[in-house]
Image (cartoon, rainbow, N blue to C red):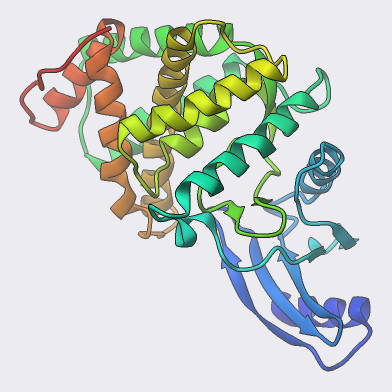
Length: 330
């Protein structure tokens, strides 16, 4: 029996009807797939997570954790861990990405700020995995392996390798010094849904306990949509003001907080370039290639601003045969 047939039979057993219409809902960068099951009682989402590749238990655990924090996540109605199936409530089909425009952006982003603060207020140690040096470093190392070596086809010399290592250590020192909270880890326009209440939150199974600016860097330096920096700063300031009022451990000086966000963003952009390259070269998924230039733009702009990050800019210039760009430094 193939997985789709098994999923259909299991879903029919859970919903108690043979009159099911099961259609693809979405897929993500992992092996998970999602289907929308339409029955007399309404629409449901069925997650297909092959146990040989995926573990449903973190999704179930974080759904309970975030739901208890008062944000809108799918409820787990039924589960079959042996087969890797979950039956979930349906948060709709309209992502932030498809709904965002100049007239909707303010309300949607401020709602996402409020939800993020509620999650962060629920933070406590020893509940989620630690976003520690080892994990942050593994993410950074995707860049030389998959983006530089595999995607660009370049081999760094020893000087370039040493320069990249030094740069990574500077970024890690900043990231690890930041206050820690619950981190969704993919808080962006494809994982937030337009729903009641806003936002509906998806793809949280990889949540960790780590740097407080990480999710803000994810959404305001989004790989899939870009806003003017003046607008980004406005939304970040609004988050920062509410976070201070909620007594979250944000820096008292906004300039310090924004610098931390940019350095956290640098870590994420480096990682994402590696991930997008891996998705293409290893997994045959070419849909992310079109988003690489946007991610590279974010990374270059950040490296132009800070003298300590200039080695990355020089390395990129050398490996991509570009002339150094003039820019402001802080």
